[in-house]
Length: 157
Image 1 (cartoon, rainbow, N blue to C red):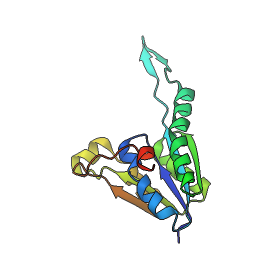
Image 2: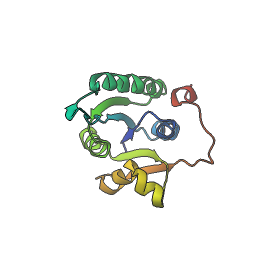
Image 3: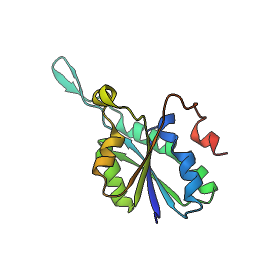
């Protein structure tokens, strides 16, 4: 049985759509939840032939921590052991590293479920996590036909 689930969140409503499901199953299954948000460094901008870094990585990291905090608090309020953290780097690599570091035995995330040209053009973090994870990955496909849901923390009240 799964005891620790890693839930990568990207700040979008789509990404958060997995949280209500985790809320439903984590309590009854006595699962611990590890929330993670990956901040990807922005590439330098070239101005007058000189690379210039315009990324305020520390502010974006702090924003990511502030984003995760109320979600973690809401899960804890429901009696679910929850930790959260921010990682910096390429999303797929950092999600896989976070799963290993946390000792997660499951990764749960949502996906657009794009196929064909859409997947080719936009890529898929979820697909790459699925292909390379050392533990099972639960993907919840969100479609355009599904109604929009309120933000996660509001939905958990």
